[in-house]
Amino acid sequence: MDIKEIIDKEPSGEQLEVKGWVRTFRSNRFVALNDGSTAKNLQVVIDFEKEEEALLKRITTGACIRFTGKLVESQGAGQKVELIAEEIEVLGDANAEEYPLQPKKHSLEFLREIAHLRPRTQTFGAVFRLRHALQFSIHKYFNDNGFYQVHTPIITGSDAEGAGEMFRVSTLDPKNPPMTDEGNVNWKEDFFGKETNLTVSGQLEAELFALGLGKVYTFGPTFRAENSNTTRHLAEFWMIEPEVAFNDLFDNMELAEDLLKYCIRYVMEHCADDLKLLADRQAQEEKQLPQDKRSMPLMEKLEFVVNNEFQRCSYTEAIDILKNSKPNKKKKFNYIIEEWGADLQSEHERYLVEKHFGKPVILYDYPASIKAFYMRLNDDGKTVRAMDILFPGIGEMVGGSQREERYDILKQKINDFGIDEEELSWYLDTRKFGTCVHSGFGLGFERFMNFITGLGNIRDVIPFPRFPKNAEF
Ligand code: 4AD
Ligand code: MG
Image (tube, rainbow, N blue to C red; front, top):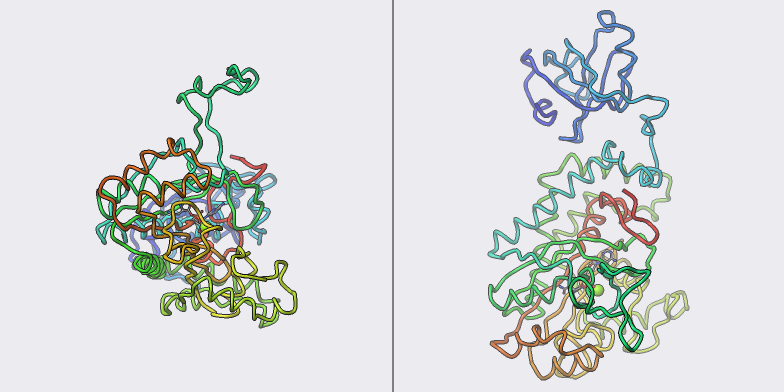
């Protein structure tokens, strides 16, 4: 029986079997046993006078053990029930001299080095149970709201973002590739008969489906070969991309805000123990800091976000705010905002969200020159119907837009961006046949996880992070 179920039972003297891993073993008597089903441990009480010394020695942190015994009222504080051990079987020993996880506080950096063992820790148990619940809440939200999930391809022949940050997929021999007469690699002889890469976004394919099924979403791995060694970037991350026919940019904002709030509420309701553990962890970590340097307590922060409307602010308004801000005037920003058209750096986004508005902000109507080719051009001819949602402590969590639905303008844009029109003929076809206003966005799943768990590094919220010079496990 799962420990999650056992700890809520009444102390009836019932006979039970339980299997799990030892967290701690105190006074040769009390085992804190965890099986991953919950953040809480089951206390197992051993009568050491009855057991062999050799067996007791094998009850070490990390060992996997099967116990049978009676469930009784706990004598100690902190738990309702405990198991009085009758049979003890060590299923897997964990030599205390070698096992890297000991009952003390390990740093997240250290645990990242042993990512194969970190699911055994309290913190990562909580993180990965939350990750499951959060992805479930996303599917539930869409399902309950009439969306269909589309499995878009992982191997593609296009660069959806036009940013050129792709991982090549090829079966050609790198030492001796076939060449063309002009002396270039002949990709026609490659596996797919053309150049292919891992997808950077499922958006373009999702659009094709939205213009047939109405409301769709993708939820899959995406890959970016950007050389960003930061706490917010991964080379492999998971993205949620809804796409909706007939939605304009403002409907798109509403959908994103509603989804984010729904999912936060869902985990607050269903993962209270795991969130509490992470909230306590954050409070503990920040205890040494002066009051004004501490973050908002985790639960308070989540409450705050679900109970307040996200701020809508156009790019043009944001530039005015930034130009007149103290750090800009005092040249405290690394990039000083001089004029309209500047790309916003994370220091600017953070200022807007954390200092100026103090809540999540939806920035919209960006200059066309700093955004992707597929975004709907506004009547001013210089801005596009793009939106980014910025979160405190995270920065950009969502990027989306209303899509350019007019054939001629889209075709022109594709050419202006230097993209081969032939490559996107299938995409252009949707604008030729029964086109309509439609919008969508991409939500970075791990950035959402960072916000919810309060953990500061994106490498700690995905089981096995991929980043420059690292593809361990
Ligand atoms: O802003 P991005 O690049 O937008 C797109 O890919 C669009 N095609 C989405 C759409 O409209 N359907 O990425 C969307 C989100 C970002 O806001 C960020 O949260 C996340 O994906 N993201 C990353 N997360 C982790 N590591 C990276 N390297 C990321 N790059 C983007
Ligand atoms: Mg973006």
